[in-house]
Length: 287
Ligand SMILES: Nc1ncnc2c1ncn2[C@@H]1O[C@H](COP(=O)(O)OP(=O)(O)OP(=O)(O)O)[C@@H](O)[C@H]1O
Ligand SMILES: [Mg+2]
Image 1: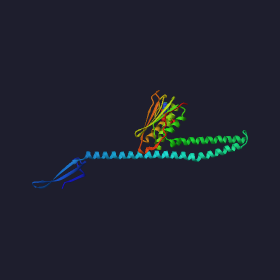
Image 2: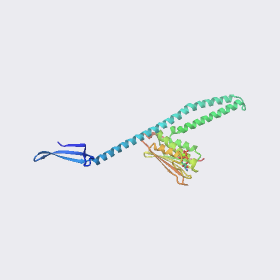
Image 3: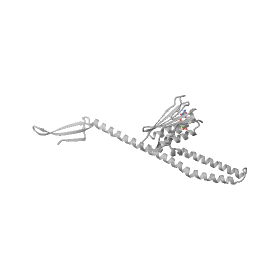
Image 4: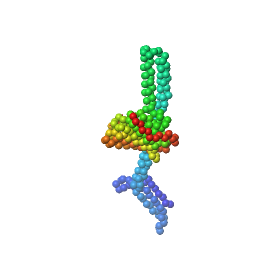
């Protein structure tokens, strides 16, 4: 009967070993039954198999790392949203209630000019300041517009608050996952803040679009150029954030040629949310 064996080795004259495979087959000889045995050196085959196994392990590890990064991003977004919600529903509501009481007390405190009235005036102003600070803090954690209306609306709100004329061109028709929307939003916020702080630009254009399985966002200013990843923490943080989605960031910033930050985020099936957005056209805002 034919037989085959692997996992064996031969010993060379110098004592070193090498793996072999063998095949044997019966053969009828004039003198009776014999056997033919063939041996093959399988060193190369084993090496190729090991390399393929190593590649598979590396691919699995990379996929696991990507999934872990994704979970971290989602959890971070979820936690930020929850804290923003808690600040709004908790501390902010209590301060608003306090504010109403203080305003009532002020009205009841008699004519303007009294010491009590002055104290209550300052208490009302302080409370209003605390409410504003808290609202800003909550919006910085996760802007309510982003959660409610999506990326285009939130970017429009961001552009409206910037002390620079800004144009938003958005081709987005569907909502994306909360973590992708949040990452794109905070990346644009950093690029726009940079344009305001460093560029001496006269306007900024933000383009957002979904091409196939990816979200592409561009922030371009017409300023002095010279942006450099690593000179501060903002662009580095932006690259890390987008990298966590397996995305890429490109910065073109020739001296005198303005700065363009290109963000490319590949979208997984779970990033493409079926919910449509209210279409947002081009809006040009003058300061
Ligand atoms: N739009 C831009 N136009 C001109 N220069 C820029 C622009 N964006 C960034 N730069 C330059 O690149 C550097 C790095 O930017 P980055 O955002 O990483 O840091 P930063 O804005 O200085 O500080 P941080 O973002 O940590 O508050 C900036 O210090 C600035 O010199
Ligand atoms: Mg910055």
